[in-house]
Length: 409
Image (cartoon, rainbow, N blue to C red; front, top):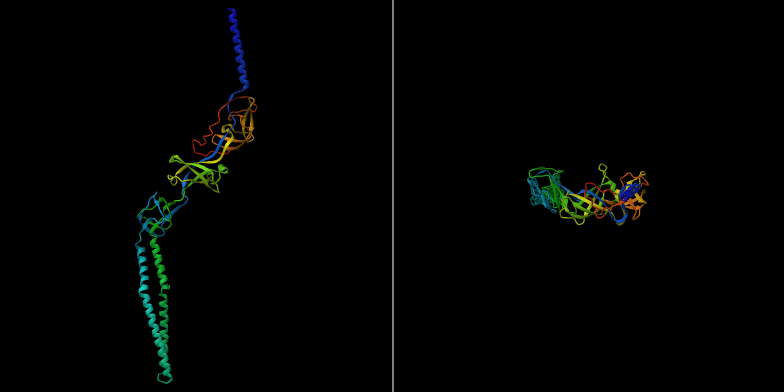
């Protein structure tokens, strides 16, 4: 019995020694921290932002004259073609003015011109007769058959007939085809007809009615916008993007667009223009994209979410974003794990995705690193619990309220 009790005491003592030794060994190794093994993996860098659909151009339709609207033939959303009637304005006074101008021109051609030509012929005939009478009296004066006063009377008659003929010629020329009077009346008629045509407001190009600010009975004046029409050319996607991402944006970069109204219908687009200036109040730069091809469901001012691919690697050396930290020197660094200890290592980063960042200098595949965030000390012993890298295939963020920051340093 005593021998059996001694054995249990021996086993208990050995167990205690082993436990104390194991505890000491664990304590010497340091705490358990989560970390990763550096790998080469595909990486996509993206900028995500919200914007809206805008027309390439908008035309503000107004009236060139002051008049009352008689008829409005379109409303918001209506498709119109070039030449289609949009509005009809009251035209009574303008029609009367055009008819008056047309009647004056007809009167010139049918009555005044023939009368002037007849008057010219009559005065020229009278002038010729007066000249013949003057010649006759001058001859009779030589034979003293008439007096000098008779000759003077004939000369006065010639002068009067000549003046009448000259005036008749001027009148006939003014009333002649393409003459001054006809030109004046034609211009008056053209002006009246042009004003009359302005009572019919037509579309100047194919497009869609975006807004209307007029109803029948309204008195409209020049300078007031009555309708707004968007052109039928491809719509643009206008996205204000944080100026911090300007360095990674380029014309031609591809993007995936999702309209809030049609979340299950993504479509491709490409950057077409980048504004040359930054909005100083918002700190954003306007980026315009062109959908290729344009979906039929796009509407003016529709809200969209745009994911622009600004960089891509098939096999980049990557680390999770939560492994990066800012060192006291202001550089980007990671905690590298080697021989049971942690050491800060400066790294140079490249593309930055939603969960992973490319490291171009400072690390190699299979290096072990700790997740940043804890207050580590250089040389600190830890036990590294290696966890898988975040899923690189899921690059699109769950929330698009903001943009994906692209650069860590």
